[in-house]
Amino acid sequence: MRRLILPVFLCGLLAFSTSCSERPTTVKKAPLPGGNKDPLRLRLAVIPKGTTHVFWKSVERGAKKAGEDLDIDIVWKGPITENDAAGQIQVVQQFTADGVSGIVLAPLDHQALVNPVKAAREKNIHVVIFDSALDGEAGKDFATFVATNNRQAGKLGGQHLAELLGGKGNVVLLRYLAGSASTDEREKGFLDAIAQNKEMKVLVDNKYAGATGEEAKTQALNLLDQIKEAQGVFCPNESSTFGMLIALRQSNLIGKVKLVGFDASPPLIEALRNGEIAALVVQDPTGMGYKAVQALADSIRGVKLEPIMDTGAVLVTKQNIETEQVKKLLE
Image (cartoon, rainbow, N blue to C red; front, top):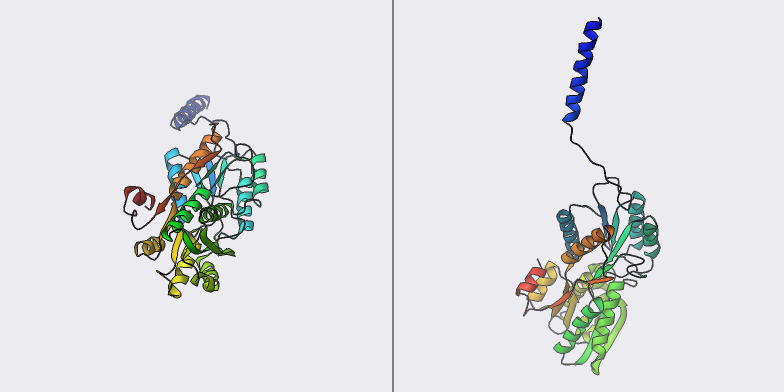
C-alpha cells in the first residue's frame, strides 16, 4: 500500500501544480478613492437633472463615450423630471452609500444638494458639478464646475432678439424653474441685454414655465394677453421653448411674435428651419458630458483642475444652421 500512496500523491500534486499554472495571474492594486469594490477600475456615477429631455440624452452619450475612451465604468441615473429635487438627493445618497469612485452631478437646486455632496466628500468620494451651479467653492467643496457660461449664453439670446426688433418694442421672458441655477443665470443674461436698449420694455419676467413642455404651454397660454402686446419672447431651456412654440402656434402668433429659445431637439430644429423660431442658443451637451467625466477621472488621479470649465454655446439661426460648426453641435 505504501508503494501506491507515494505515486498517487505525486500525481495529485503534479495535477494541482499544472492546474494552478494555467490560471491568469492578477496583481491586486490598492483600492481607489470612493471604496470601489473592483480596485482595478473606476466606477463613476453620472446624475443628471432629468432623463427625458433630448439635452440629457446627449449628455449621457458624451459621458458614456468618455467611459469607453478612458476604460472606466459609467452608471447613469437621475430623476425622470426636472422638478424632483428630493428624488435626486436620494440618488446621490444611494451612490454615496454604494461607495462609487466619484460622482458627476447636475444639481436640480443650488442649495438643496449642498449637504448630500458634502456627505459624499466626507466619504472621500470625488464630485464634479456640471451644467448647473451648486453653492460652494470649486476646488474645495467639489473638484470643478463644468458648464456653459450661462449668463453669457442668455445675453446672446437677448442681444439677438434686440437686434431682430431694431432695439425697440416689448418682450416677454418665460422663466423655467425657481432654484435652477443654470436657467437663473440665462434669464439674468437675457435681462442684462434687453436693459441695454432704452426703447425696449419687459412686459413679464416673473412667471415660471414648469418642468415639462405641457406645463410651459399652459403657462404661455395664461400669458397670452401680454404676449399679444409683445414683439418678442425668450425661453431659457428646451421644454419652456417647446411649450411656448406650441402656444404661439395655437394662438396664431407665429410670425407676429419672434421666439428666441434655448437648447436643441428635433422639433425645435425643425421649427427653426421653418422660420417659426427666430433663433436658438445651443450648448454642447455631448461635450459637456464627456468633459465632466474626464475631469472627474483626472481629479481622482490627482490632476490639478481649473475651478471652472466653460463648454461654450452658439447662437443658431436659419442662416448658420448648415455651417460645419453648427451641424457638428447638432449631431
